[in-house]
Length: 119
Image (cartoon, rainbow, N blue to C red):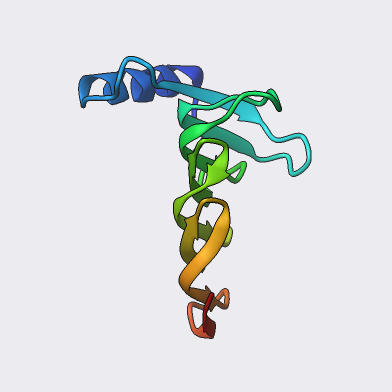
């Protein structure tokens, strides 16, 4: 599925209608390192001196979710997950003030659990 600029605008408007705060914005940009693209919702900045807060979703070129992360004051904070191309969950856990905490689970591409550990 190819996501067009019209769909991006619709998603941004939908976010506004369902209660996004006025300070939030939805932004799309290409990740030059991977060729994937990123959508951020919240107060995000790619400038090193500004702290980011909110949810960031990174997508593969085909539109499927690659990574979901949450940020608070420039540090990862909250639920994190990575997905393989095609949508299968690959890794999930929690960050607190930029550090992994609690239980983490890694999955293989076929969905079986590979590793489980506690930070």
